[in-house]
Length: 260
Image (cartoon, rainbow, N blue to C red; front, side, top):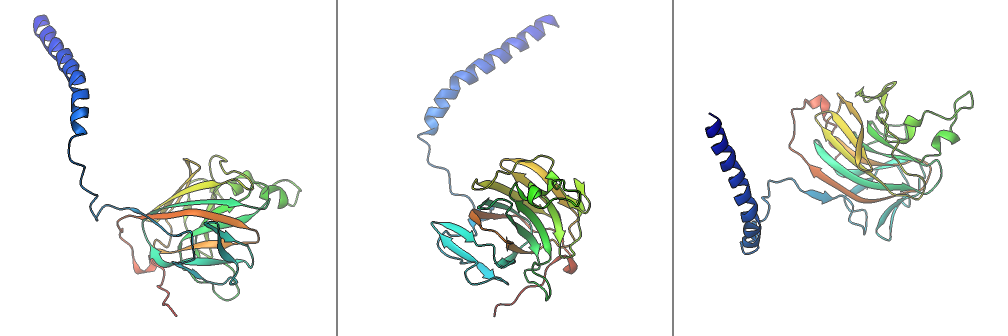
C-alpha cells in the first residue's frame, strides 16, 4: 500500500510540474487564437441612464424647469423646490450604479426605486423605496429635542419605504434600515452607491462595501426617481443592469404612467 501511495504521489507531482511548464506555452498560444466571440444579446449589460448631455430618459414630475440641469457632464440638482424627476420606464429586478456628491453641509437627497413615479396632491415626494443620500453634517443641523445629534444611521444610506410603502428592515431603526457602517463622504466628495434590487429585497453597497439591506417590499416594480430636497447635489455615472423578472402580483407593480 505504501508503494502504491508513493507512486500516486509522484504522478501527482509530475502532473502539477508538467502543468506549470505547459502554462506559459498555452498562454503564448492563446495570443494566436482568434478573439472570443462577442457577448450574446441575452447577457445582461449595464446601460447609461444619464448621457452627460441632456435629460433624455427622464421626466420632471413636480419640480421647476431649472431644478435639473446638465453642466460639464454632470447632472446638477438645485434642490428647489422639493420634488422628484423620474425615469421614463419602470424597472423590476436590477443593479443600479449611481455616483453623487452634496455641495452644501447637511444636504439632503436620495434615489427612489420601485416608485409610483407620481406625487399625490398635498405631498412633495412619491411612494417608493428610498435610498437615502445625506451629507454628514445633517445629524448636527437637525438635533433631537434634547439637543443631541441625530442617530448616525441617518447619514449613510438608510433604506426605507416612503409614502406608505411597507418593507422589513434588516438593520432596524424603527421601520427603517440603517447601515451597519458609516461609509459616506462629506461635502464636495463623490460617493458611489451600488443598489441591488431583486424580488422585493434591496441591498446597498456604499463606496465599495455592502452595509445595508431591506426586504419584503410591497412594491417590486416601478420607476426610479431622483430627489430634490433643499440643497444642491450632483450626479454622474448613473447606470443600470436589468436582471430577469421575478414572480410579481398586480398589487406589487406600480401603475404605468401614460405619456402626455
